[in-house]
Length: 428
Length: 168
Image (cartoon, rainbow over all chains, first blue to last red; front, side, top):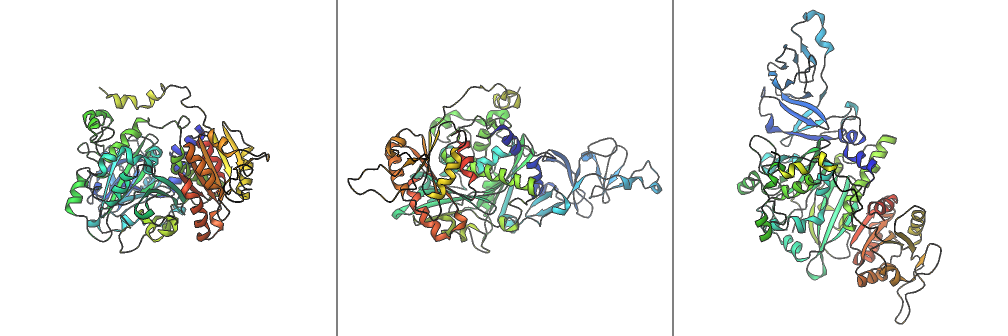
């Protein structure tokens, strides 16, 4: 349970809000690089942290992320002409460069210098790892470029997708650290999804339906360990990473690519669920990429031409009651991503957390909220930099390990929980 | 026409959620296992709680030998001796609060009683930053067999936040 004011604090991310301020101190995934595939390509409208923006790429390949609307009469520059190092408003021909600076106002004498007085709000937008990252905070606090491991992999070893989720970011993110739902909601997929099946870890998962959890604070966020019985009195640990505020990484299974998410607010009632997969030492196989393209694993199929999942609230998520009854899928919804999203969206756009009844196994969620609230307070009161910005906090891994019963996973699996150059994730 | 899911998950429909209590307060017994955690628990006990009760087992000297009773080592914060089995019997959740590096042996008796009565246990370890990993490991090994959920928290305030989150 959270008090209403705490819930408001964590769920509101627009300009001027504390949580919005925290998000704005991070590089956030904004677009897939493939959305701006070439110089002078059509611009793309996006909304991030309740701000309407336009992303585009100029004649020299420079990325731009500006206020969507022309400073003159408020026309959307999405209709603009991307030409000769600038974006020209089709209404009266005002032209802007990639920094948002107005460089031409045809109706005014050039000598007047009027255009130099007009500048659209603009944010840095850079490409890394197939993703265009935006920084929307104060320039003097701009951190180094992100160093999440997947983003540093060669293109053939990583896969990234994004989907629209029609709920507040926090209820989506909390799903990413809620390890105890997997044995129920996703039980059908553990042995059938091509990107999950065939792992020894799955046997531990299904052989011990009452996992025990350990939540341990990490420098950037949390380690959430789920412990199940393995052979010879040992424990099988699945350790999920949460890095503040919105990065989660799921423990790997066998040789499958490892995957995780960013949960980025679009506004207070919608978010982008970014989903990545990667391998460190080998290219993703054709079979794996085809499965991801087909919406397997943590990815989805789309409504053509959009990032909205094909199974969505407008078609009741294509729920199949017969499949549910047969046990093919626990909720009747197919696919891991939409099993999560359908339930999280069903909570309503922003869940009222004053009414929930958390239990002991929800301590991962309780601790994440606790850390967010504590960091917000430190940021607002003392200007303390929140966790997750330090590059060391980004060089983390999830892990699946078998350990002797007396060892804390944080220590025994210390190497497995940080990036090891040239080595794969530790997995079972 | 909007689908049922689209309509029902809208903000407008959220206004029609039934505004009635959907649970009864759970009885949460919070037990400090050592003196430092007893201080934390004593501070917590000053707050207003629904059905939380606070105890200390810091006087625990070791497991009773065969024939000895459980009595005497568990007390409320006023120092009155309490009977472990009776307390566990009336609990929905038992929270054990331990300090890294301190003796947490009482966890085994508490845990055993909880196991017998099918009462859920949570263990919180405080002060882990102040001790070497090896010391933390010893505390963990005393608690791990008896806790369904184990949290290593850097801030003492977490205990209060957790209890509030659980509506204790």
